[in-house]
Image (tube, rainbow, N blue to C red; front, side, top):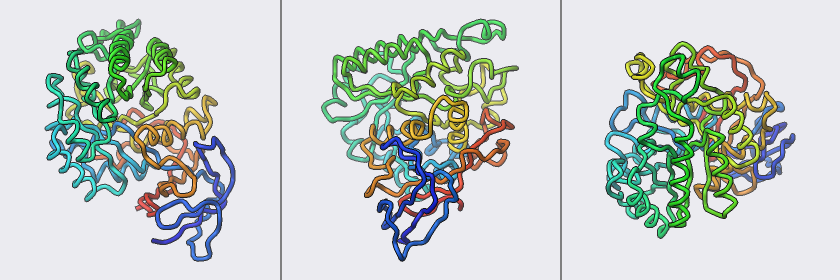
Length: 421
């Protein structure tokens, strides 16, 4: 494997919390430190940013089941173009990834087709139906890095308690979607004046707090390792803060869409802005941005959810939820930097270091010996987003035709270039 020497790089080190000009050497797929090597291929970064590759928790790839929406090949190409070097994929496929056999198929397909690393999650219950625990032990042996029923919330608290108790005995990570499921069923927007004026079926933001309260209680009973996939409201943040202060093993994430968009962006029923949970008020958005800056929210993810045209070209209440995000995650996150809400090392703590730590990975760092999963980007490069140019099979981005800043110049996985192709 060719040794590399990145010179004149603006090194973004989330572990050290630094942003400085320097040199980084790579050998045998690992970071070798700042020292030069005579046999290395020199890459002049020209003052552009070099950071650990993004670790994206919650990517949906429709294999098996609906490959026309997204395959491991198309998702991997989109990830590489977006600076994502590790995709942590969801089990809400058809069928659900709830047996070692299906998980083995997914791992094999990912290894064959994707240019970036793929770490699969498995279902917490069989068929994500919330009635019977999945084979957590066997699934861990087959390579599952976490367990989640995604947005199919386990309504039976007794079943959830059994699952978390067993997960605790194995040291497994449980990822949940904190929502009160009956209260939020059928909702397309967050309740308030805007939803009322538009006549949209809505849910109170209190549903998120109610769901999180229940989950925190079960974590307290079982001692489980728990991650909330999306915390999007100020009310839930206060509960999260108390749980963390009490010493519970709880982390939380938020999608880039909830950090950069609000309920008013739906405008005239624009279905590309329909996500789950629904976009929140501007006050809630700012509260979650502050929570990322302080570290209360650990992880930013794309929550990449491809949907085809037939699923989105429907009345807003009937349209499928979700937006693609692998290629738009980095430029959208640059909005937080350019608006002065957060600096680059703190942003990369949430995009790369914190998800790596939560999953027990060595990625997300620039220290010697860490995997050479890297992204080189220009944080200030302006462009207009054109969804037709996205590498994902589905094009359902809310940022279509938006003016954005931040362009990926190169991506490396284990020291090997994966973008540009």
